[in-house]
Length: 225
Image (tube, rainbow, N blue to C red):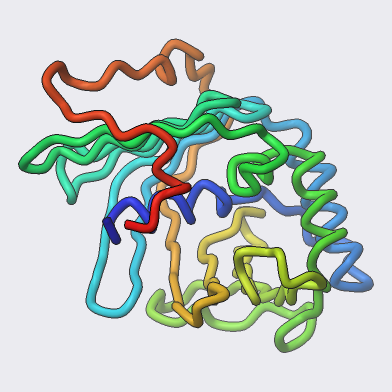
C-alpha cells in the first residue's frame, strides 16, 4: 500500500509556476505564486518521487481547478485520478485492486492546492520563510541549475505535512523540487521535469475506467490497512 501513499501525497504537491521578480518577503513570494497560478488552465510534467529506498516515476496532468491524474511507470499501469469529488487509485497487482474514495475538494487538501484558492489556504495554514534568503542557490543533484528555496512550516497540527520546502527555478519560474516531512516523520521528495503548461488538455483524460475484474475497495482512507 506504500506505493499509492506517494501518489496520494503528490496530489497535494503539484508544481506551482512562480514569479520571482520584486520579492520582498516569503509571504509575498507565495502570494505571487498564487496570482500567477490563477492564470494556468492546465499543466503536465514528468515526476520522480523518492522516500528512503522507494521510488516512483511517471507523468502528472492537471486541469484547473481540481482535475488531477498521475500515470506511473514504474510501477507500470498504476494510476491515480481525482475528479473533483472522487479519488480513484488503481494498483495493477497482482491481484489488481481499485481504491475508491469520495472526497470533497476542501478535504482533499492535495489537489485543492492546485488553484489560486488552494494556494491562499496554503498561505493561511503554513508560515513561509526563505531557507537561505531570496537569492538563487545551486539545486542539489542538478549541476548548473539555480533555485530559490522557500520553507513552509505548518500553523496547525491538522496539516498532513509538518514542513515543505519548495525549490523554484527563477529562470523558468517553475518549481523544480518539493521536499516534504509528514506528521509521521517520513521525508518525501518530488522532482519535476519537462514541464508543459496550457496545452489544452481535454477533461476526458480524467474520466478513468479501471480494468474489468479488479477488486474494488471503497472508502479505503477509513480503513486501518
